[in-house]
Length: 110
Length: 114
Image 1 (tube, each protein chain N blue to C red):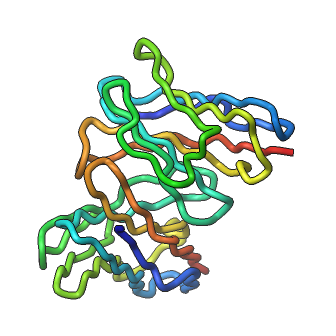
Image 2 (image 1 turned 30 degrees about the vertical axis):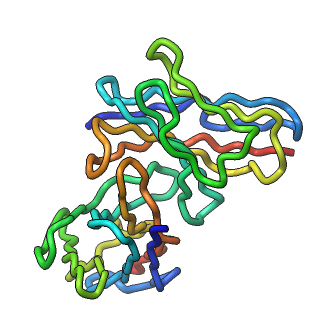
């Protein structure tokens, strides 16, 4: 079946530094990848999505590029802010089902 | 943007009782979902629902679980009877279409089974 792997469970950074959250996936189907962000006690919200190989997609300062050759969809930001502290989920969709990764908790310190 | 509502926000019940979690999806959406999240952990797919039917369900969707959306009202998740391991936050989501369409999530119902 489909699977999504996020290798970092917890990332702590100082404000202003760059960040990359890793996401790799396995599927036998044509992949559609998402990044969702979940702030404390809130619902997950869509941050980015892509199904186009080697094309960078951006939103709210975050960006990611789907690389089918390496089955990856890493999330990056050049300068993190305090408000970026949240849980980030990479997810893969097939038909109407989303498979989520385990999530990465990002904590930004002043 | 579009909002999904969930009622109640918290529910505490005794093991063995029945519980119904209610979801008010985005009005023109056609696909509905339930997810389970144990505190701070991975969101796990339970079930999706379209055109009055369950399309797909996961291994977590035990026989004690059922979903329905009678007459276009709330999309409900019923657990009967509940077990201790059902304690979690349950998120409802809806989308206009399947596949790559964005799913909009509700704020979740925190269920505690004692």
